[in-house]
Image 1: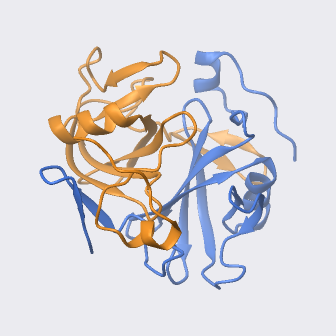
Image 2: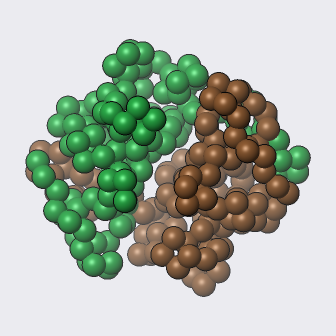
Image 3: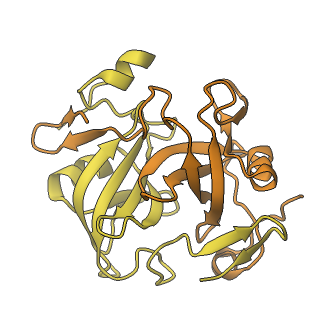
Length: 128
Length: 128
C-alpha cells in the first residue's frame, strides 16, 4: 500500500483517492473517538507507516514523536484500540478513528486525555 | 491573560494550571466537537492569541496557517462556533472544544470536515 501525493486544493477536497497530506515531519494528526459514547479520547500523530499499519491491522497505531518510533497503542499497557472506521478530513492532513478502547486511552490511566476543563474566568483547570 | 510555560512531564499531566505546550510554530491542535451530537467537526490550530480570544469571547477562533493570521471562525462565512467548553489534554498540546456550530464547520459547506471514510481494503475514500 503506497500513497499518492496530495492534489491542488479543491481537487484534494473532493477526490475519492486517499492522498494524505503529511506535514514537514511526515505526519498527519489522528483523533481517536470512542465508537459508542463518541467521547474524544486522544490526539496523536501518524506517519505513513503508522497509517498503513492501522488500516492493515485494524489496531490503532501511531508515531511516537518523543520516542521517534512506531507506537502500537496498548502494546505495553494492554490498552489496545480496535479500529471500527477511519475518516479523513477535507485537505487530508487529519484522520478520525472510531475505536473500541480497552482500558484508558490516556497514559495517565484515565479514559480520555481530555480530563481537564479550562475555566475561562479564572484560567485554571478543573479536574474530572 | 498570559500563559505560564509547561512543567516537567508528570507535573504537566496533573497541574490545575493552564500551561499550554505550544509547538515550534507556536501552535496547539484544536478539535471542535458538536456539543449535542458529539460529531467531530474539524481539526484546526490555535496560537496563544487564538486560544486567549476563544476563552475571552466564547467564539471559536483559530490560527490560519495558510493565511498566517487570526481566524475568527465564521467571520466571513457566518458559520460561527459558540463555544460551550474547552478541555485540554494531558500534556496540554491539544484542546477540545464543545461547540454549537452554525451552518457547516467545513469550508466545503459540509457539516464536518471528516466526510470521507477510508476503505482499508481498496484504500479509496467513500463519500457521505
